[in-house]
Length: 495
Image 1 (spheres, rainbow, N blue to C red):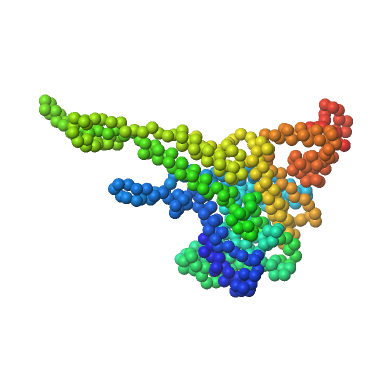
Image 2: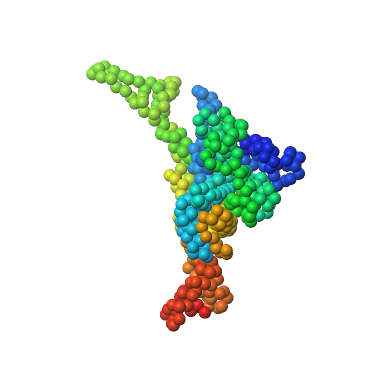
């Protein structure tokens, strides 16, 4: 949908003075909206939903009676499985966002709870892995911080640098009554001023942007423009994308799907799965019988009606064999290639796992359903390394999100914000089987005085420096008269 609006969006940008002309766009490479890239996003989106038309999931076949026909291929919907699995590994209810200031930490927890952050973020993180990105926009409504989640289809970057996107427009299309409305929310910079503009457009059909109308026609109380004079961040939104290099457009700030480079493999898996199911349908039991046997005969002695074979039984196929003396009943049933199909599908699933950042054997097919490995993941495995790679990007984005919330709280005087605070994210690494080994290694490093105890606590528990110091103070108090039997698992008394 978004790719159809890009040219219309440019026209509105000219009117608003955001862009000054076609020549300037060509010279200013940062404002380079690639319409073709949104075709890729639409493609990934269709696969994520389980079906892509045209030749990908539509098969052509030929029958004697009707000639060439088209049918929909059966699919395993592996893109959904891949995106969901990575999202659940990276973020779940065990992930903690730790803030050094206790009072501000309570405020953030309330904001997360009121916005159902954990549930929404995991859902949109899954969409991010599927479509190549997600955006979180904090804003103020009714003296409360609200969080809006936007998928890659509703995000058009305007300007960016090596730190990320700092200007963008967010389209939102909906129908009300007999009209289609498109709400455009612009985030731009005018010198040192950060400007958010809202425009509303009305059309008789979905494909057109239509005329500009007043915001009050749909949104009551929505400001047409808000300016921030002391905003010291990149943008008032956070753009998160999979930590995978964009090899479709190396100059684009947009991310790519986790399975963007595995489309041929996905198509092959679905082809095999469709063939596996057709194997049972087309390989059903068939018995060839002479056509003269598929008839009713009256017993001359009793006058009763007899039938040689049940004409309604689909197992039988009637043929005219010519000379009746050569007529015979013949079993045409072929042997089903069940194990061959399962083995082939699993081999392609291993290739797909490698292409999407998982270890071989993560996904498997047993002939009835798709399965995902439930055993713990080694820290040396590809799955765990991919998980940590994505967490690096997500941690930075969540820290930036907290900073924007702090700015809004301070600017609108919603709550007290400390002058300085630290934010850290403790991800759930319980899937790693080597956690015990990490404790042992940290203990040995502490005994050999290779790492400060505070740093060890920060690394293992994901705490800030201030929180780790508080732990140490409590440990020192409890172990003031420590003996060998009461030493903590780090192997020291806190000194």
